[in-house]
Image 1 (cartoon, rainbow, N blue to C red):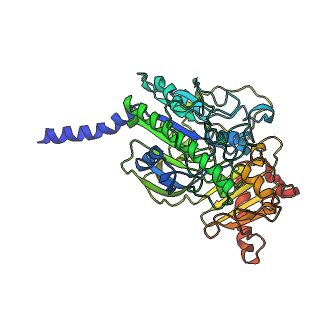
Image 2 (cartoon, rainbow, N blue to C red):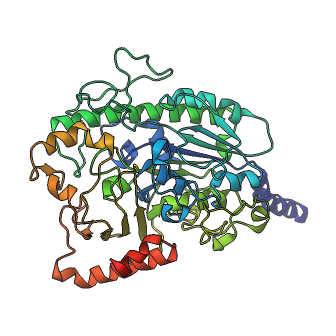
Image 3 (tube, helix red, strand yellow):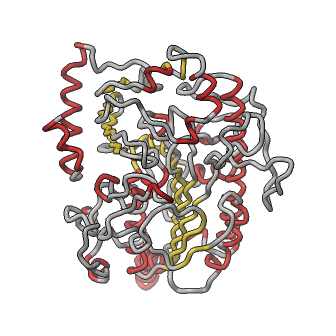
Amino acid sequence: MHRRLFLAAFLMGLVPSLINAAPRNVVLFVTDDQSQDMGCYGNSVIKTPNMDRIARDGTLFTHAFCTTASCSASRSVILSGLHNHANGHYGHEHAYHKFNAYTNIVGLPVYLSKAGYRTASCGKYHVAPKSVYAFDEFIGGNSRSPVEMANNCQELIESDSDQPFFLYFCTSDPHRGGGEATELPHEPNRFGNPGPKDKPYPGIEEVVYDPADVIVPGFLPDTPTCRAEIAQYYQSVSRIDQGLGRLIEILTDAGKWDDTLFIYISDHGIAMPGAKTTVYEGGMRSPCLVRNPYDEKRGIVSDAMVSWVDITPTILDFAGILNGQKGTVKPPVLAKLDQPERDTQQNPRVKPGTFHGRSLLPTLEQAHIDGWDVVYASHTFHEIQMYYPMRVVRQRQYKLIWNIAHPLPFPFASDLWAAPTWQAQYKLGPDAPYGAKTVDSYMHRPQFELYDVQADPHEGHNLADDPQYKELLAELIKELKEFETRTNDPWAIKWEYE
């Protein structure tokens, strides 16, 4: 009897070590310009069975936010755990936009590689320099063909290597197609969808939506033009879902699904004026689905307010690289980091191994957890000509936006300016409605915008000048200043001389 009890106790004690001994693989699946448009987020029209599957088997975050609704800048935050005012990646990396991270920043794949992971990037990359965001392997393929992308990752996933893998899987959908913004909304390729002269994407069965059926969010105008654009956006989201399903199938068939942390997010919200490039809810609020294979509770809907600065710490925590509650990288991994030669592209205020975010793992099995009630945003550029720095503190009920360059008209990304939905309203004149705003109020903004986002979720009624909210405004400005000090924001000096 005693021997049986001893054996049972021994085996119970062994289970955690056996679990920890298994390769703790990670997949970070990032889409391009997707809002919380999924069945699991309450959209009854769009078809996303595989996204919904992740939600049922993991945790869905209702209050998940990017820190900047700009592709390159947001990805730099996702891969560094630092706001982009600290990592230096203020805007787009490609072509003449020229932004990149400081050379002494350490990116997520570098930490993982030093800890023994095989790292691979498939699809959209859009960050620089490669020394900061260094992957062992770059897997090629059409980043708008997600089933092909998944198939191209099969060799990595099926490998018998004893090393765990980190797969950074990034689609270019549902980002609106390049060079097509001047087409009429009913024509193909608005969001990269195939038209009659285009070859269909292998493995994809296109799901086509009737514009009359789509759900128009309150920050956009409910017009036929807008509905046509959203219908094509839905089509590309459904295409992503099929690629997601194929990737899950490959992981399952390879026997890796039960040892893989799977995170699904978007870099930011939909590519429409009112969302992308703004710090309004349409731009900041994004999908976040996390499946930890070792959690007992599944299908959790969490109201924790989480941010993309939390992604890197979460993955490092799962990999066993994070130093407990301190939220810093463990010394053995730090010791393996290559020390870059001093140059003018370094930020001496950034210390490798520390982050602005924290691990989400403690939140995954709880619908509500205390202490997760505020997020921050920091946006400076999108394209190089689009200087419009904004800083945000977003609590559960109230949200403060500081438009640092408020005397300037709000700048437009080239594709968003030409978007048919915007142009249709713009041509109606400055008083034309645009969601909860007007064309003029969207383009010309005050220094401070204060919103009750529970009562006014589409941010149409600015409370900043209301005497009733004077004390609240002062409190939020103080909190914003503390955030900027804590994260070494260079734009904090604007409080002193402007």
